[in-house]
Amino acid sequence: MSLAVRVIPCLDVDAGRVVKGVNFQELRDAGDPVELAERYNQAGADELTFLDVTASTAERETTYEVVTRTAEEVFIPLTVGGGVRSEEDVDRLLKVGADKASINTAAVARPAVINEIVARFGNQVLVLSADVRRSEETGSGFEVTTHGGRRGTGIDALDWCAEAAERGVGEVLLNSIDADGTKEGFDLDMISAIRAVTRVPLIASGGAGKPEHFPEAIDAGADAVLAASVFHFGPVDMIARVKDEIRKAGHHVR
Image (tube, rainbow, N blue to C red; front, side):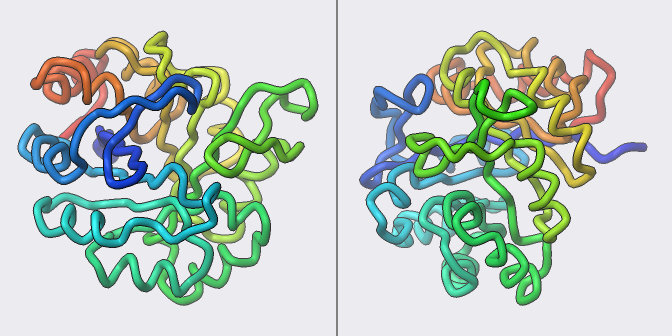
């Protein structure tokens, strides 16, 4: 039997509060991160992802205090990203309760940091968070961005994800900026394109608006599905509904 598909709520955090916008902009308050984490833990989430969305832009550390409080209340794997720049940052996150660290901006600036983190902690702790938008400036039509989607890089997303996998990242979290917050469905072409160039587990993010969208992402090549708006502002049993839909589509889910 294949590995179970994971369903992962995402907590985008700014100034200690969960926020959510559209296309990474116009953020609105969605609640207290610890309260939401507890809710998702009880609702059957397989993992949680905690992203400090302004840490890189503001050139500051991630909010370790919030991570600590969250880790004390939930007992499913917790991935934390935002402001991760070095193996020392990863070490600190693991010590306050994170299970995995997510890296984006710092890895684009200095790809060797991936090798350094993996050499010290193993690839199971490192997730590449790729914030990708459609662009005519790259060969594939998909461009990597940094600083919470605010800065283009001119780097082809397919090339970057393949390189990061070769350097040892354990997973790729693929965030579609164009689909983010639209609730119109995942960017299936983007998922398929990234799946074709890397074999590491692929987490699809951006665009989910209803349970039927999730199996589509899995069919396109995702090993896990991540969402925010549909969980934060939807019915309390949305995680269960999503898992039922995935099962109905013939996929193994926890």
